[in-house]
Length: 105
Image (cartoon, rainbow, N blue to C red; front, side, top):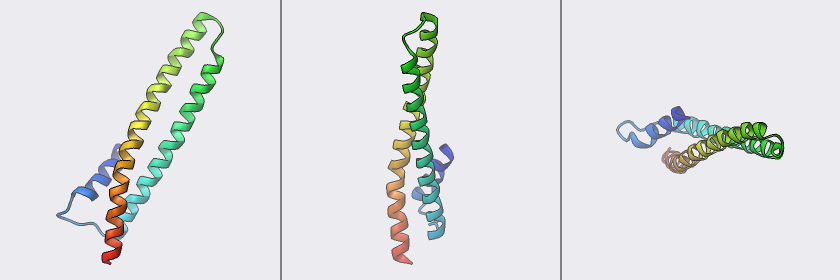
């Protein structure tokens, strides 16, 4: 995830060497693909949490193990949320940069 964020930031913050429209659009496409992958990952994590929570209610040791797994998944979900928020914050300005480059072409 850090690679696509760095790539987007390079396009947005490097005014010394403006990027060509096709390069901006490629980066934008990669960013959207990364966002979709993050959303899919979030859904899988949420489903995992739901499945584990449904299994609670048995033996104490088993419940403790499941609770630990839920905590781990919740941390992964939180990290995915943070990545998705950051990516979306960058995709808006990148879309604007692509629109401006398209209008100038």
